[in-house]
Image (tube, rainbow, N blue to C red; front, top):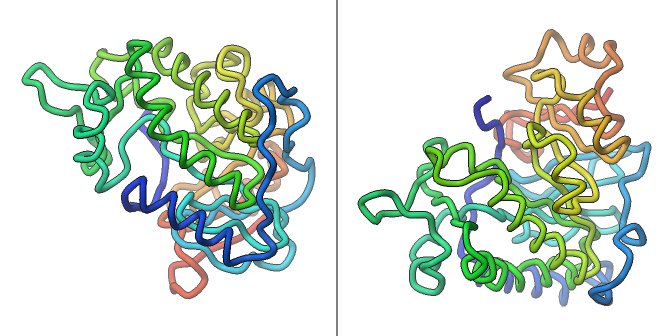
Length: 287
């Protein structure tokens, strides 16, 4: 199954952390969260509301529409004032513009091809796959992403979603699901230690392993109706599922999608580029 994720291209990791922290300082509505102790019960962290409306704003932050009760934003943006917000972090690949920093600061964390060059995601040519095969590399990855996770908590986000768990499927066999889950478990632990719930992004082919082995608290899916995965998502995560369907690849009309009654309650219809309301391409709809 092809990768179906949609993300905005974003700047350097250090700049991302600085932006989140400065947004926290500037906004009294985004009070810092006290970090949880490492042995705190993840069940006591944020849980997705069983009802409400979600918006997926990775294409740019904007004031939540009327009725929206949950927002997903990139780590470079502040949380939405007065609305529970989830922080997006690319956990398994370099962000656009960050590869040179990864190579300089954590070269062991970048997956290499036979010629020694970084392995590039074919669908996202400005991103390189990270290499979680050894404990040393996994530690290096978490050490570089940890400050960004902590910044999300300090800014007032209630949870984090880690993208590209499924990058092992684009590694030409170099990486395995076991490698990805080993890194995922460390990222989830870091999020929990910061007081954040942690979300699995796509990769439902793993079944319950993301929940049981990595410790993910909820799932963020793209097009579970289009790919007939909503029932599997419910089997693994119950009502702790966010789902985004896209206007350019619906299974029928939006009315038909809603009428099937299979999509999670927290499902949103968005334009493929997740454009803000100022764009003529912007689409936002709920069942």
